[in-house]
Length: 590
Image (tube, rainbow, N blue to C red; front, side, top):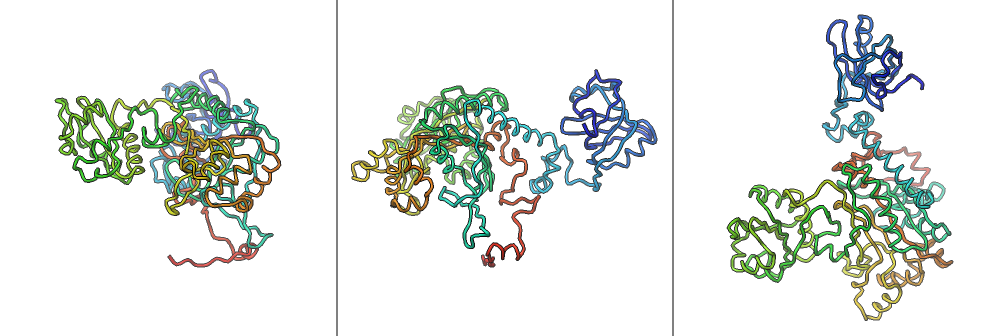
């Protein structure tokens, strides 16, 4: 190898006596005396101690700035004071020559490399190339590489063909904002970066490809969250011809658990078949369509029991209760957890508890006393039990109860088995909903999903024989530890059913042809039934690494405002570039 015979993580006691050449970054230099110093040399693979023992060599070593890249020629010997914390801790290298390959021209670094995670995020992102030198940061990128390789191998082993789809494409309504790219040769027209390869992978099925996958880049102009990076993300995109959701489930349940068990922070993952929970049941039982099944808490409806108890926030509202047994925490803990719930849900949480004497005390207990026996019976209360409640319209009460389950489940000992990966499928999603802004019928999720019951159920809704809101979509979400990894569906491959589905939301055949011309026309040439899914790679690796934010597992992430502070993007371009693209910019007054 150029500039080295071994890596800095390779030498062992059996290499004593060898003459070697090591190269890497000078991490630290500790001077013990005029002619004695200990240098730590670091590369991608590990660290090795270099012992400087002569005046001439000390002069050279003292002139090297931290994080300079150097090459060391020397002899391996056994260390007198061994370090069992590192693989090379039994040996050291005595140098006869040290050369600087790349000098660090700054005496002060933005942060200490091995403590870079303690620096503020802006500094870390600006100097991401230094941040990645930290072995604790780098290990997430190594994990990412290994997981993607394992996913790719597993898909190929299941007879899927890897096909890349276009990055420059047409804008289409996918639910988020597009990133637009001006077309120089077509003034006034724009490409869009794909929010997902959805249409292309369905067109591949129509083209006769049987099983497709790719590690697909997706681009959406949306705000950042803890589990979502702004700008771009990657997904394990897959599609299968002549397939039902059972086929998709079987592939995912075969591919994912072994990878999670091998590469995850926890070595236990759900085995097939994953639990299946209808959407309506998930909302009623867990208060969310992304339940964390490691938590044993569930939600009960107590509207009929408590809406008339005299507590004003309950009056005429939906009331949900979460019962937490074996509760021995302080009032301070309850108040903090309730405050956290309010921040996350935008709605208050209320509480009372049954003490060791089986008396109802604390919080809103006085409003419950007149119904004490009924409450105890309905909720199955015993001593040392906390009851946390939410109230509001159905959506608000459910959402808040879901946050209560998550917050208290994680905070109260004994109610969450953290050391595993618990998968589940959320199924039976509604096809339509009433839009909050429009007040009219709209698609609830993916307009490309096949309605359960096909054309017949749409015709019945059109005739008024059934409520359109009762129509289910053959759609499914994959959830792991309370995080949605993916949405998928059996696709609507029949042009007649597709047009009828869009007519329900006031869009006719011409609208469908205009919005999805390639897919509509392709389906008119005979499309196979097909189904697919696309688990998020970034979210998957975030779960496997145990990180709290998704930026920790992305090599060069943007900040929360979708800026790359390292590359200074987005940035301004020249007037000449704008003229070539037939674009003028205007000042916006806020």
